[in-house]
Image (tube, rainbow, N blue to C red; front, side, top):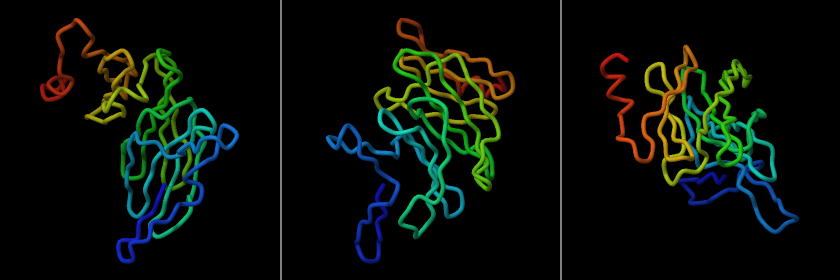
Amino acid sequence: MFRPDTETGVLTLVKGGYHFGNQGQTIETVVATRGMTLIGDRLYCAGGGFWVETRLFEFTKRRDEVTSSLPLSGEFISGICRTGDHEIVVGTCGRTGETKSCLTFVDTETMTQTRKKSINADISADLMTSSGIMRAGDYLCFAAGTLTVSRVSLTTWQVEEYTRPGRRPRSPLSDLQRGG
């Protein structure tokens, strides 16, 4: 993670925003590109992977280091989105094709996990440019590694698929507009 200073043009490598792995042969990015969310003057994103533990990171404006971090379940980051004034949800998944995904809800004021829910779906960590999660009403929508688009209810935790190869696509947003 780099912090640019727009006044001086200096680009600072943020302490804790990188990790050396594979016996020094690679630099694994700790911060994933699966989304970031901003609450006040704090930026939240998550990262991890082969060489480092999966974590949620907090970066504070004008600081050159990770302000806080929280360990997460799952092997890879699928996405992150804001669900309340001081709450975010992070989606994580297992290896390709596995259906051991997890949704972790975090109170950003205390940087504590408030709820964790395992779901029997593949929330993709890398489906072209469609990875990530998005909140729409009482649902979290996500892409899966098998080219499906699904949603999970935040009240019943039921997962519904909307598109699948060979099946005519259905829009999850049209259901929400009808109140479903």
